[in-house]
Image 1 (spheres, rainbow, N blue to C red):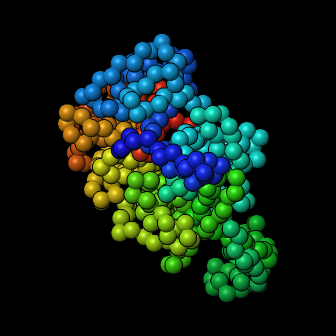
Image 2: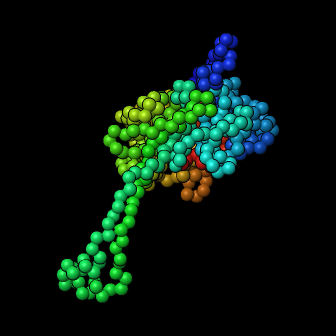
Image 3: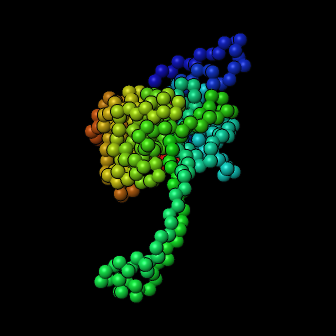
Length: 377
C-alpha cells in the first residue's frame, strides 16, 4: 500500500465537499476498548504489527493511544467497542454503529468524534462499510414484503376422514381433531442492498437485482479489488438457504445490477465471517458447519481449520514471505497464533502474538479479544 499524502484541493475550490477530495492514504490502527496504556495491548509495546514479524518497532506502553505511531504512515486511535465495521474515508476513521437512541444506525468519526446519521429504509440491516472510488458504501440487506397469499380452509377434517379407508373410524375417534381455518401468509424477501453517500448528508439506497431471482446480503466491501463480498441465498425468502460466498463487481452493483465474478466459496449452514485486504490480495473468510476457511480474490486457498474458534486475521510480510497470521482460540481456551502461507500452515505460536484484525487496506484493530463486538451481522 502506498503512503503518499493526498493531493490538496485547488485553492479556488476550497469550499468543495469532502467527497471531492482524494481518499486518504493513511493507515489506522484502532485500539479497541483501550485506556491510556492501551498501546501495550496486543504486543504493541515491542512490535509493529503492521510492519510485520521481522520489523520490530518499540512503542512505549505508557503513551496514550493517538500519541504514538506504529510506523510513519500509521495513526493509532483509541476506539470504543460496539461497532459493526470501520473504514477510512477522506482522512477520517469511520465506524458503523447503532444509534444510541435505538432508532437506526450512525457513522462515528473516531478522528473528530462527530456522529453522522444514516438515512436508511425500514427493515435495512447494515453489515459492513467501505469506500469505492469516492463513494462511502454501507452494505447489508433489507426485507421487503411480497404479495400476500391466502390459504382457504377447504373441507373440514371429519369430511376428509371419510376417505381414510379402514383407519377412518380409529382416526375419527381420536381427541383433538384439527379445525381448518382460512389464513394469510405474507412472504418477506431478503434483498441485497447498498446505502451510499458522497458527503455524509445525502444518502441513496440501491437494491441489487439478481437476474436468476436469487437473493443475498452484502457482507464485506473489498476496497482493493472494487468488489462486494456477498452471502448468496438460493431462496430470498428462506434464511437458511445461503449456499455460497461470492463476489460482485462493486461499480455494477452500485448501479443496481448484480454482475457476478467467477469467484465462489461454498457455504453449508454458515455465513461470511469477515473480509480483509493484504497488499497482495483481498481475502474472504467463511464460517460454517465444516469449520473456518478463507480464499483470496484470485481463488487461492488462504487457510482452513476445523478445530478452533477464529478471532483475528492479519496479513503480514515477514521473514517467511507473504503470510496470514490467524488468531485462534482452541477447545482448551488457549489463544494461539497460526501462520499460513499459500494455504498451508507454517507454524503455530503458543501465544497470542498478533492480537490484531485487519478490516481493510487502511484499518487494523487491536483488542484483547481480537475481532469483537458487532464485527459480524
